[in-house]
Length: 155
Ligand code: HEM
Figure 1 (cartoon, rainbow, N blue to C red):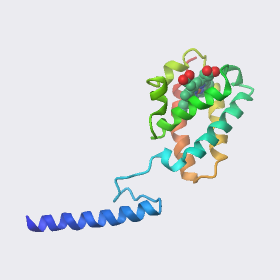
Figure 2 (figure 1 turned 120 degrees about the vertical axis):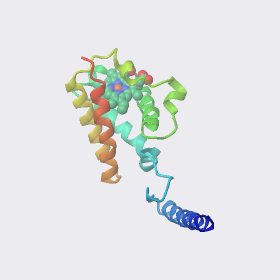
Figure 3 (figure 1 turned 90 degrees about the vertical axis):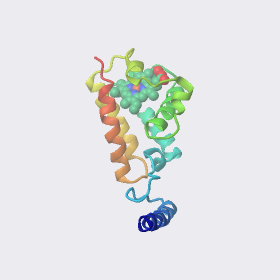
């Protein structure tokens, strides 16, 4: 029993030291550290704003999908920024302001075909790849966007 207790306290010390090192270098080792960074943490608020800004500038001038967007550009950018904050693991800013996201239902009034989802993804890919961030983070985000965009197809 005593032996067991000693082992636990050593393990805790190691965990604490490794986590402190990982925290300082912004590199969490998920094996030791339970404080894994979210996609939102790794991206950062400034990059998220930049990405959303560039994305909608592309969308609003896109020959295939610009016709779908009728709201004020600044408003849709703000809604998307709030939504993506929570989508990528940050605070639930969108829900606090607009309630449950129900994204598929909110897209129902807009006829979205597969070609529209592809065009949307092309704009998002261009916006994501314009950022000065790790390639693995770009891949991580596109892996979330692809199925989500295809899920919005409703016509
Ligand atoms: C599949 C292609 C997509 C198309 C063609 C599309 C199109 C649209 C349109 C037309 C609107 C309304 C704009 C307006 O009010 O003028 C909208 C709103 C929105 N979309 Fe999409 N969308 C797509 C995919 C997505 C995806 C994948 C996400 C999230 C990852 C997303 C997030 C949002 C958000 C947050 C709003 C604002 C909802 C609100 O009014 O509160 N959309 N989208």
